[in-house]
Image (cartoon, rainbow over the protein chains, first blue to last red):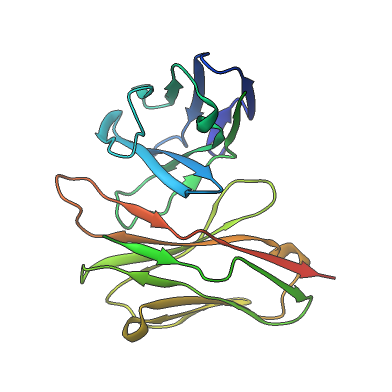
Length: 115
Length: 118
């Protein structure tokens, strides 16, 4: 069975450009999470969905960030406009069971560099 | 507020040595969950173990073992007879049972980078 799929794996863009990160969760998993990993702040939960509905977006840093889940097999994280401080590795994870005790399956991440 | 501290930033050991990764947490909740994840060089995080606050039994899985002590708010991870394939960054994480309004907060430590030298 395929794991969590993320694309692209690497993204280099210039400040001010729109960036869209994509995620396909494991089939049958009702929960989807977006994380950001930086050296300074470590791993941070940005937002999570249950059955395609955003449950908690309190971790989204600012209005430049938005996330959608139009169906059970696809989610996007969009940054518009991007800034150099957005450079990080963005992970998508999915789980079968609900938080807070759920085992999460992580994708390989998207390494974003904003110049 | 919850907090996870992994004081060891980097550890290097020679293959076959035992190594313990420390994790200390802070929480006001009586019900919470602790996790360990492994991040190999390939990048994705891999779930290793989950513990709830009411289960203080230590656990062993092959060469891996975990020591949960509520009295010291610690959840340490030991690898016995380390191997090169154990080289990775290991994260300890804490999740409280209730964060209000249906939300929850999973807090990760900063991670410990383990290098196992052949």
